[in-house]
Length: 90
Image 1 (cartoon, helix red, strand yellow):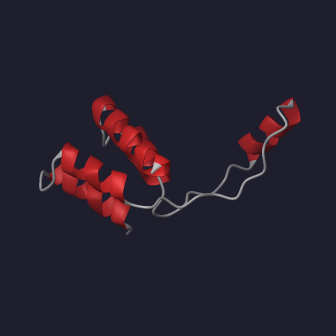
Image 2 (tube, rainbow, N blue to C red; image 1 turned 90 degrees about the vertical axis):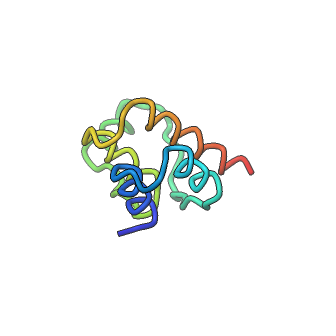
Image 3 (spheres, rainbow, N blue to C red; image 1 turned 180 degrees about the vertical axis):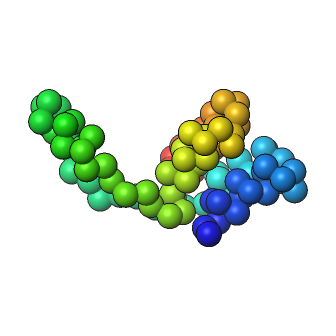
């Protein structure tokens, strides 16, 4: 398990508030992917659909997966996404 999954578990079990988790998201360094810039062609998108990037442990991918599993509300996801984006700007 990663720090991200641990934080999400603590949010779900109530041992941390949404604001506490968001604060931690703002403080942490998020891993980045080395990806090529898509050229916008239909072929580029077709290839991505057939061979998507693997999930990266400790990345925002874990938050997205939790959201898709309905483990996070829309509000929680939006707050955490904003917090992660803010950490990238600092």
